[in-house]
Length: 123
Image (cartoon, rainbow, N blue to C red; front, top):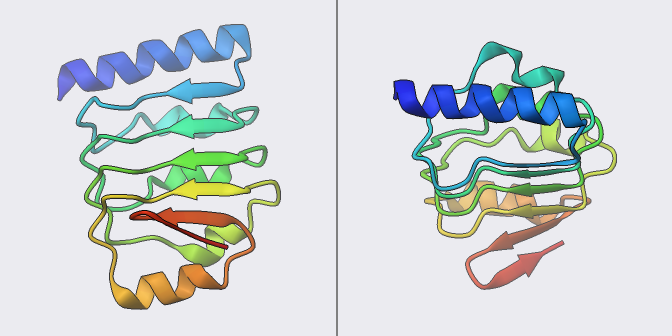
């Protein structure tokens, strides 16, 4: 995991220096992130697909400019839907290929943003 954490720290530094709008941390089998991830206030597109996430990392809920969130191909079972809805500009969340419960799917159907589950879009 040390190499994954080092990768995240390096990409975080690069993103801060360039004030990037997109951050791609996909395909790294990550399950934890540095504590200072919340400083990425300008991020509009965040790709965390293909990791080992069981829940949405807490820093995601503190990204006020987030518009797209890619969480497909993880192990997600826990999502705080109301906290995602608090992100005003969030318009698209990809949750394909996650073991999401039927109860959670029901909650996601009433969201203000578009959600991809399997081959279906829920909005």
